[in-house]
Image 1 (cartoon, rainbow, N blue to C red):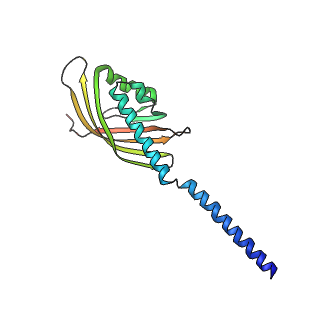
Image 2 (cartoon, rainbow, N blue to C red):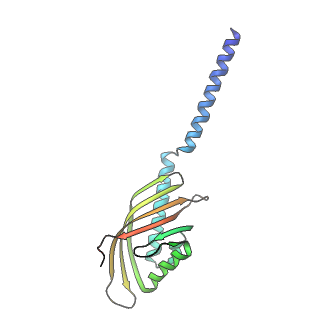
Length: 166
């Protein structure tokens, strides 16, 4: 009888340990809602920082939010790769225009260390040499990856105009 109780006790304790360990493992795989909300806010902050840098004609301020292997896919242009190319792309715009951007994410989803933001943008570019201001609205998609330091950086950025091609 004593042997049966002892075996039953060991079985119950082992079962509890397995459940506890499994639960901890699942918690690692399934971050809390609070963690996901913090990540969503961090992703939104990257978008706001990039928009602020755009409005300040700060190409380096935009490029610092891209990973080393990031891809930028602007309309009617070949894809470019890396922060230096991203900086060069934006600098060419800022050399010719004074920008004004309003943008925001309409949707942000986070899954582990990856996220995407789908958004809307309204852009005005006033030529520095004079002339008519260019205006465009666009939809865009950013893919971001959480970095080892906990920050988020853009891995892919693509957008296209809502206006018909001319």
